[in-house]
Image 1 (cartoon, helix red, strand yellow):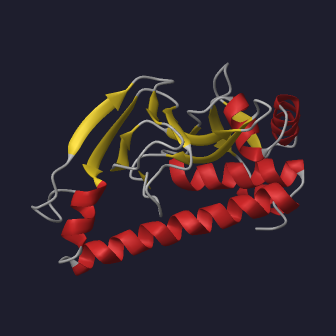
Image 2: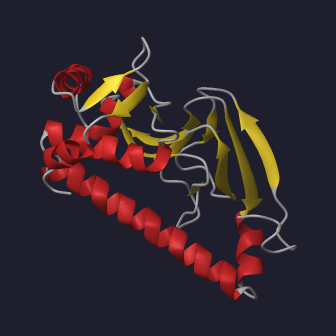
Length: 207
């Protein structure tokens, strides 16, 4: 989503501080967003106060593209995050005469649908260890640079994404470290080196 791809696209850029809300559930879906730097979480609060995170959006990801007029999730900046955005009605108007843009929007929609299906399988059928392994495999693919997986989210975020307790996340990560599947390179255990990807994939039996 760049102005270079279509001069008619008028993009604005904003920065959100860590923990700031970008948009709320049931608010009008007026804009489509792309992450430039940082990370965004989308989530729902259940009636009993529990939080279910539906997705993490990292640099280059598109979010806020709804199939209705209102947002279904709340989104927040996990860390200080920069995004670019365009009015949804402007994007739809430009797409009417831009075949390449239509193709890109269809690809984004299909990608988001695939992620939702994968997440549904993860929550519905996988064991706790399979969920943690699947999460690490996903984040390794999306975030690893120079051999280091830098996790911007907290363990509470990970727990709410995987539908597990904080204690289960900690035990699972410690177990993988003891097996030599991964190692941490900082005290807060946010920077991970995956030592044995083959074994990690074996833990995710549904991959």
